[in-house]
Image 1 (tube, rainbow, N blue to C red):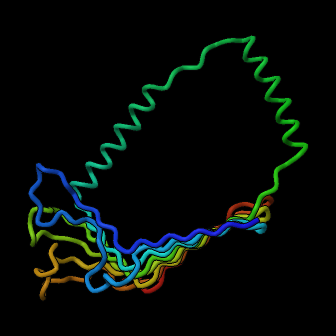
Image 2 (image 1 turned 90 degrees about the vertical axis):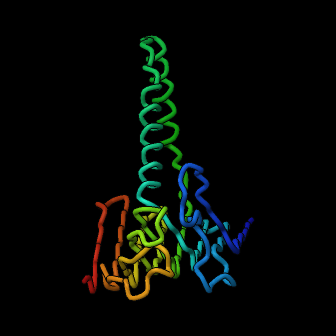
Length: 220
């Protein structure tokens, strides 16, 4: 048996609706200007006898994040993590039950080792085209300093019984410093990072150590 599924998202919008902050624009995610006719996200899923394949393509997306917003999100996650650890209960000391559980677990481990489960092939491909990612210091000012990053990115992950492979290729990575709002950027752009290429590869086999490779070209 086999199964196929496909999802397409034309436009995804995300706004910062915090009422206490008066922003120049609340829009945090949208399509890049001039690319509204394209699909923002395409996801294709295939499952068959040979394994599972997931293809995801994201293109022409505009993302904006302020330093204050990132700090707020990070603080929420850190507090939630600390509270989760604090609420964990200590395990009860029950010698008899522990010995019984150990006996059962050892029996289960023997059964599982006698009949190992087969590992199907899994492949995931992620392609990101023409994104524009903006990091801004102050959302309340149109001329606030910002960093704008553009790039092309491709990620491939493959897993099978023989090995697992992950490769990531980042092309035309460029960062410029400029005012936040596009209309304020005339003749006020400074190139922080000229277009460069980054490649990462990781391979892991059951009988050999993990091998990783990182290469960076044209870094300036």
